[in-house]
Amino acid sequence: MGANALNILVIDDQKHDFRLVARALTRSNKTCKVSWARRGEEALGQLQRKMFDVAVLDYNLPGMDGLETLQKIRTFSQELPTIFITGSGDEQTAVRALKLGANDYLVKDSTGNYLDYLPTIVHSTYRQLQEKRLRQKVSDALKERDERLRATIASMDDLVFVIDKNGDFMSYYQPPGKNPLSATPEFFLGQSYHQILPSHVSALIDVAMEDAGLSNEPQHFEYSLESIRKTFWFSAKLTLRKDRQNRFNGATIVVRDITEIKQAAELLRSYNAELEIRVQERTRELTQANERLKELDILKTKLIDDLTHELRTPITNFKLYLDLMHRNKQSDKFEQYHEVLVAHTNRLEQLIEDIVKYSQIPYGKEAFSTVHINRIAAQVIAWHQPQTQMAGVQLMLETCAENAVCWGNEQQLITMITNLVKNGVNYTPKGSVLVRISMDDQNIILEVKDTGIGIAEEEMDLIFDRFYRGKKVGQLTIPGSGIGLALTKEIVLQHKGTIRVESKVSEGTTFYVTLPRADVASTKDLQANQQDASRSTEPKTNNSFILLNGDAKYKQNGEH
Image (cartoon, rainbow, N blue to C red; front, side, top):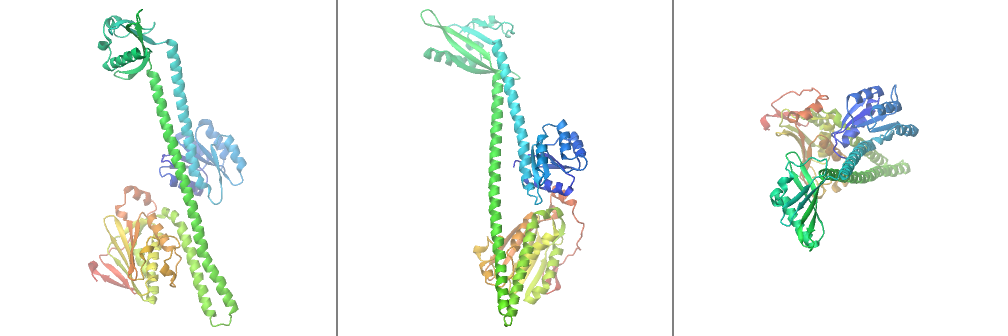
């Protein structure tokens, strides 16, 4: 889409539906300004007070319904592009709306798919109006130019100069009823055109004289004369004069003012160039949209394939071990089969939970508030201490930043830290997992370092892909869905941060996450998030601390 700053009026009595429409429009064009009217009467009032580029009108409105509202809109605004939205199975209403002047319509389905098409239809309808206005402007300019040209031809505003063989003016003719030149004919008579006319015009006459002598044909040329306020253009026709012996005897020059024709032609070229640019932009936008649709189709296919594969494995195992349990009810392996089923059930449950969290990421941005990273990191560490104690892994937290506060969604950031901590614990059979929090001038820096099995170099670029689990991991009995790191990366990107990883096989892995600090955020970002910001505070301390096996051990100024 283009980056036009459109003013769009959404007329819908449901606040939830308005928010969905506004989000769809602003997601495709950040510069859109979306206003809301709950009723038809309110919409008419806003249209009278303010100019809008497009209106999105819902049929089901209290009081005056959508069709009545559309009729009222058309009484004082014939050109306002209007998109009519009806419920499923109500196409007859949409047809009536089109007859009343709606530019297009959408059927509101329960899945919300109509929101995917709405931005394209809104911008397409607006561009059609702009192109219609441009065509009308070009048509009016051409019509005006044609009328002026007809008047020019009818009046025969031709000036005639006659020069002798020496280049001196012999006579001068101006059509009757026209104002004479500021210089009288006597001033021209007897003077050479080299002395009277500007040098660039004299040079053109010299060339035309030479070409006419060689071709024995009249010569045409154009020239311009500059005044204080504007440029005048003239078309000249030079014909040689000969005596009875067919010898050169001078020339006749007929001059016509073509300034208005030139201006109209230049205006037409300008409009054509503008139309060409618009066509190229539209073609580029359609190409990009088509490529995006292809990408989305590929992503959809890949997601379905991945989900099918990940769900088929536990289901196949369910069937297998249920059959084994049925066949071996009295076997001593019955308990072993039961444990395998429980493990696969837990994996399937974790997979579904991760998929739900992953799908909810794009909608978490509305709940941004100030989040104290130290506090939520301490919570995550405390939650995982029992697990790590049983596994013989040392889980530690080190804070080198007193007031590490960012703008964000607290639950999402807890999920991010939890995923990184669980990842470190799960892949560290023995050793330690360290969570370190520090700050620089712009960002909060979160490090999660483990002494586990590490990641092979050839797998480093794949670990953030959905459902990817390393080759070595597949040989171990380590739980996981393969979505955790993909979910973590999405959360970091939603918070305008970065994430990277360093790892060596058999030595360990370190994840580095940066998040913008709240105290250095731009004024615009602060204002955008201030409405939802919580006023929670965090106790100030000059100490950093380590949580070791559930106990808090402090260290002063970074020293153990």
